[in-house]
Length: 65
Image (cartoon, rainbow, N blue to C red; front, top):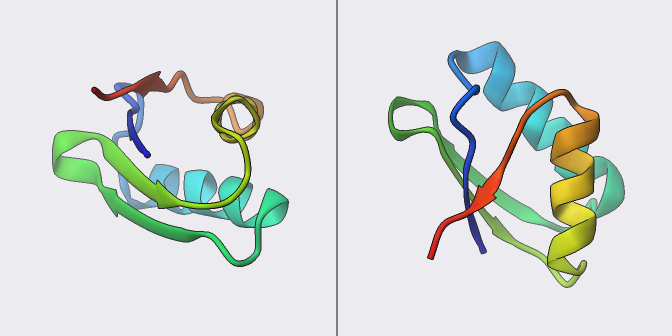
């Protein structure tokens, strides 16, 4: 899955997003590109739960099609 996170602006933001995702799925593979504000996630957890985790960390993700 790939999410656009427009309010992710720095390495600290990226770390907060990655930590939030790894809390709900420690086995998730998370690749974040802050320059283009995209998080790529490989996880067995349903998309809605990943989105909820990112939102709980204070960010506003949108699914990238």
